[in-house]
Every structure is written in C-alpha cells, then in structure tokens.
Amino acid sequence: MPASAGTVLARQETNGGGTYLANGDNATVLPFWQGRAINESGQVAGARLDDNGGFIRAVLYTNGQVVDLGTLAGGRDSFASDLNDSGVVVGGSDFGTAGLASRQSFIWRDGVMEALGSTATRNTATAINNHGDVVGTFATGGTGLDQTHSYLYQDGVQYDLQTLLAGGGGWRIMEVVDINDSGQIAGQACNAAGQCFAALLSPVPEPASYGMLLAGLAVVVGVRGRGGLRRRAA
Image (cartoon, rainbow, N blue to C red; front, side, top):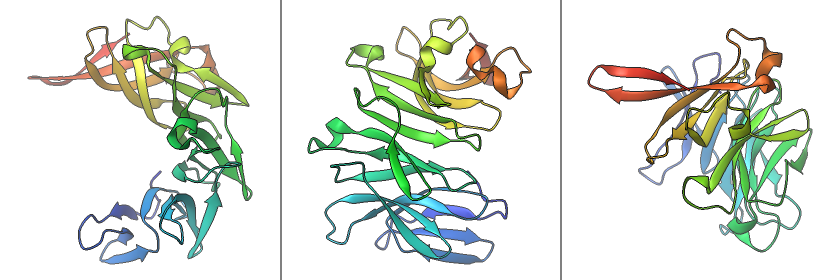
C-alpha cells in the first residue's frame, strides 16, 4: 500500500543490498533485510534475518523501531507480505519443524500473531485491505492447474475464490497479489491451454457496494497483443 506523502519503498540489490525509503531527494536506509509494503502512516512490513542469521522473521517498522513479529507456535521462519493503514500485518509463517511444508497464513494485530484460515493446506496471505479482508494462496494437493488455489478471508471465513467466480469462463485463478477497499482483487488467471494473464476480480453486479463481494466475482483478463492491452471478461 503506498504512503500518502509520495514515499517510495525500495530494495537495493547491489553493494550489500538493503531496503530504503525514498521521498524526493531524501532516502532513509531501513535496518532490516527486506521491505514488502508501506501504509499511509509510513509503517513498513517486511522481513529480516534473525540475530544468528539463520532464520527469517517478519518485522514491522514503526516510529523508527523494528518490531519482530515472531512466528506461529513451533515455527522458525516467518515473513510479512502486506499491512493496512491500521498497522495490521499479514504474511506467512511455518508452525512446526517441516519448514515450507507447514507454511501457514498469519495475521498480526495488537502485538499478537494468529493463524489465518485452515492449517490443513500450505498457504500464505499476500494482501490485506482497510476492511480487514485478506487474500492469499493455498496448495490443494491436486495436479496441473489445480495445484494452487487462491482464497479470500472475510469476517472469519475463508473462501476459495474459484467458487466465487460468476460463470468463470474457463479461467482458473492461480494467484492473487492485492485487494483494495472496494473489494477488487488483482492476480493471475490461466485458461485450459495453460496460458496465463494478469486478472482483475471485481464484485458483481457492477457497480456494486462493498457488501456485494461474496455475491460473486467477475474476472477481467488482460491479454497483450499488437493493439495493446484488451479485455476478456468471463
């Protein structure tokens, strides 16, 4: 989420790497490995190496301090993907000794990290909006295009986004990367031929109130051709 004052969050890959905040001619180097998102208050969510350099920990940079968000019970690694303007952070954490095989979405608020949704599948939260709605991905144990699904977590319930598509048009939602305060979701969709494109999921009917999100989602897929970007609606 962008900061309102035009501050840019960036990562430098040369000269040892690092994350910094840039605003005009000024740049502030942040004291951790990776920044992933910034909110309107200038708080930054990301990840750092722990003091031993062996494990990755989700962090929140706020008021000039780096807060280690910890891990889910029994976990060693965690990372933050996004945060909203209330400073609520989402991401992924392992919760046992199986590492990535036990990756679980988390939400961190008021100093407490909690598991988000089912722990039956490997899953990761990728974004949160200012209503507290979370999107992410989860492994299904299937094959081909069915190996990974995307989810929406709203009001304590986790929904498979594929089941919310109005019609679907043969598109499989493979990945989601963001959700805005109008309930629109950005991600990637693939067709039966395995062709994948950027996709926008919007609540239907359009225009819709925010509360219509679970009534169904329409997918618009961008296909780049010689005439530029055109739209395919499911």
